[in-house]
Each structure stands twice: as C-alpha cells, then as structure tokens.
Length: 100
Image (cartoon, rainbow, N blue to C red; front, side, top):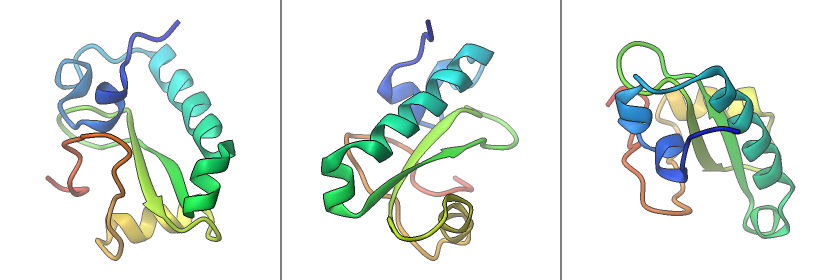
C-alpha cells in the first residue's frame, strides 16, 4: 500500500520534499489518475488528471489536474509545462507551475 496522501501527490513539497517517495507511490499515483479520469464528475467538468514526474529537487511524484478532456495526456502535460494552460484545483495544493 502506498504511503502518500492527496497533499503528497499534489504539493511539490509532498512526500517530505521528495525524500519519502517510494516506487509503490508511483504505482498508486497511476491508479489514482486512472480512477480520477474514469470518474463521471471529472468527465462532466472536462477535467483530466495527469501523472507528472517532476525533475530536479523536491517531490517527483505529482498529480496535476487540468481542463482538456479531449486531448491526449502527453499533449496536455506539454501545454501545462509551457504554461499554456492552468492547473485546476480539486483540493488545496501548492503545485502552481512546472518550474516553481
């Protein structure tokens, strides 16, 4: 079982600033993203959850939620990284931009 909370998956300082992330957290994140994207409320709102492996310092195991149901995950992540689209909040989070 994974150890992460919603805040761990959505905050760049989650998992003790990345120090506590384990392989099972990445596996749990994949399942969480799948479940979120299959949820009717997410579909109705046109929202999409994405897995983001943040490079460098801090938490590498993030979930980002963006508007753009009709586009492929890779395209949405590319647009978000280029700051061409904003992250959508499902709950309070500190993931403000890809480079913060």
